[in-house]
Image (tube, rainbow, N blue to C red; front, side, top):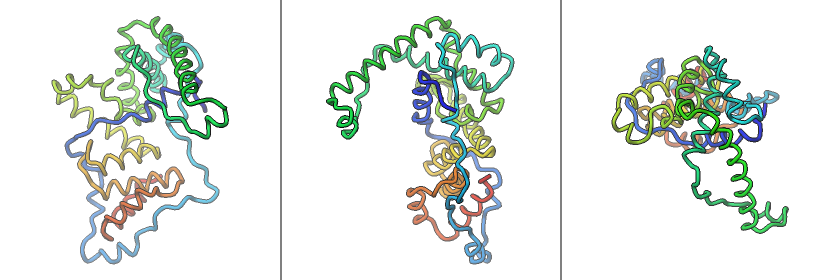
Length: 291
């Protein structure tokens, strides 16, 4: 499925935003069983599976970030149509309603902001026979015109409803919507508030972190390669959870297997930093994490 043109930029925006850093310990259930005793180490290393290679003839699963479909309708009309189903407990409707309201909130907060500098591929400019300055001017004008139409529709939605966008994301994730669970970790501002609110409510921040990791684990258990990849990043960076390179490596391998892709180069670099025992543990855990 493809996004309607007016809503595609929102999913791209959500896909590139960063999550909240810093967290207490959130051990992965079952990781204790991956420990290898000194006596068993040679056998465990020998039995460790080779890193994943794409399976011939196996198609790649659709990306959660690419399968969010919203009709090409104005925001106020979408909100009106989605609200009854979301209020009745439909998690997908709640997730989509969040997307609509979050987009309106973003536009309202960034109204009048200066356009971000653009980098344009020189080969593209040669093909369309335009100068970089002319192309960027055209792109900015088109974007501004589209945003003005979006803002007109958003202004028909009560401001209070827009400010409650985070409530719909929270409900959708809690009800098991995989897309909501995947992006939850990136939506700290919608779910907690700005920096000032975060400083005033450390309890909310701690709860957000716990929920975000729990939702990623839920989406990962359902087979989402993106959730596995985000968990890998979390464990390797040590921001939202305590740093654990073995678990991070395992999730990276599982993500590659679930997506039927070759293991990325940065994971190969990580392998050079792990001991043979850690590699064996990580590969063994990856086999249990991958669907």
